[in-house]
Image (cartoon, rainbow, N blue to C red):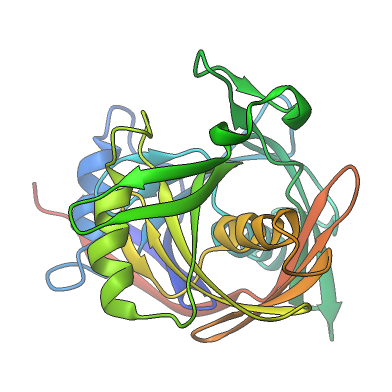
Length: 283
């Protein structure tokens, strides 16, 4: 099967967007694993599918590098929004995108007719109650449903955990250690406490207006950036009284700006094209 595609990235979190509809019945999990492999494929953290929607202007599916499907992706949705605008699929600069986490509304910030940055209404976080039901009322939860103590192989660890489109768990550290991100992050991802697994964010608070972040992503491993993780980490820092409600999140290749308001969380950041290509997928 021959596939034309565009590769894009949001602060290093990279994605492949197939151009045109895939053949009916294609194994999208297999396609994702083949394309995303960094040694024998194109290389990416996941693929983004641009699909029609009955409840929004577009529908986005995101398939992780391991073939699993994610509910949402912050960096991915900025790439998606830039792609559909610059490829002429929409003339709107504010529109809805259907995802498994609900409808998400990006706002395109243009410069010379091109998308300079994308501001996204990421909605509010959600939580799991004692019956593992998703709720949005934090006041009705016991404290240990958000602030947990995990038993790991090496030590016990205090974490903050909730759902920001996808499950996120925050570990606050004095200084980010990338080896810890890999070793501890991969262990926490599959901890029995999280029935659907979890993304793991290692958060270094710099001051009340800035944090640094490195993420181990469920289904993708350590990534250079995570949009939903940046939102979740900004919220966790604010919840724990460490920062203000608006923070700059420093990632390896740049920054995201997160604004926490009473009824929404906003993420603003860039998205970039990397290259176009064509590949013959041999089953």
